[in-house]
Amino acid sequence: MSETFKQGAKPALFFSTSAFAVSFAVWGLVAALAPTFTELYNLSATSKSLLIAIPVLLGSIGRLFSGMLADRFGGRNVFSALLIFSAVPAIAIGFSTSYEQLLFLGLLIGVAGTTFPVGVGFTSKWFAQEKQGTALGVYGMGNIGQSIAVFFAPVLALQFGSWRTVFFVFAAVTFIWGIVFFFFAKDAEVTVQPKTLSENLSVLKRSKIAWILSLFYFLTFGGFVALSLYMPTFLREIFNLTPTDAGARTAGFVVLATLMRPVGGILADKIGGAKVLVLVFVAIAVLALLLSFPTITIFTIGALGCAAALGLGNGAVFKLVPQYFPKETGTVTGLVGAFGGLGGFFPPLELGLVKDATGSYTLGFVLLSVFALMCLVINYFTFLKNTKTENEAIP
Image (cartoon, rainbow, N blue to C red; front, side):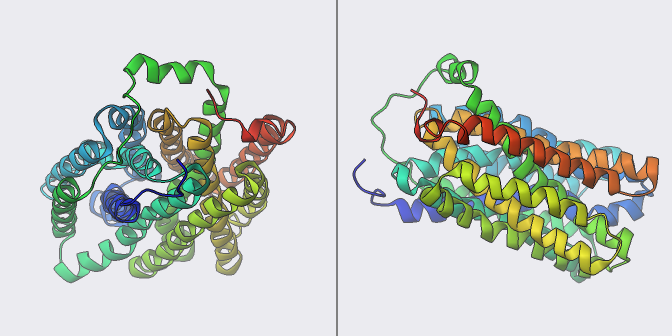
């Protein structure tokens, strides 16, 4: 492809980014209202953590298949179908009457989280390789949907006088945007025949790089999801903030991480994704420790620093995916995205268990720091020690 982008690329980027924002908003809705459910059902820290994490589970595992489906049937069809289906459990939650029902429907609403690899494959096909980091960084700004959920859900619940109405509103928006995406978004024209399922899966068997990028995204995106989902709980439990104040501060965390994602893609286009990740992993290792301090100022510095670093890391990782796997972008994105989602599933559970066992979250933050240092070492030996590696695509 000689041009940096095809005609129609900018509208495609708008539709994919906005659709991702809508799906991410409904995906994070249960976590945004978790403090309300905690009071309503008198939940323990572990039960609340499970409720926060459960939508991430299906959203993570489902990415393995949604990326392959998009490679096979086209991003427009798959993205539209996932948006429309996501509205169903959102409506059902509005009628739920117990913690058990909420937990089950929260699992189903996780289907909204499976849209991520669909959008990556859909978007990357519109842009040349030298611009894919930037384009996918912009697409990743759809993360702001999480900010929309954590900020507006508590506000709307107060305005409407019921948390149930909030789910109905978000379900309606998700359904409508699924219809809009189907009729107005277009797949890029490609000359390569879609691969079979076995052909798509073969790259996962022969390439260790796909698994290493999955590990990195487990940290960067998983850390972003886990902290953004759990941030209202931190702020209310540790610093006794009101739901609205906690939601606003969490929205700031999400917005900063979202804005830094395209910056990470731009930097990766210029200096290489692996070099950007060095900065990211070092920053997370240091800043995660600041989250354990019980003073709001130091905690805020650590949280905002982590937001910036995680956003940069998300953009850098997804510069590397289409660079190494131009023919299997959706499939590899599904794997990497699944690990990223699981990175958002397990930490909330771990934090809840740590809190119940020790009375504080400190050990959880220490483990985050150690994991970042481990990724730093792997990044060096995989990409930087052999400089040839970072510039070669997988055949």
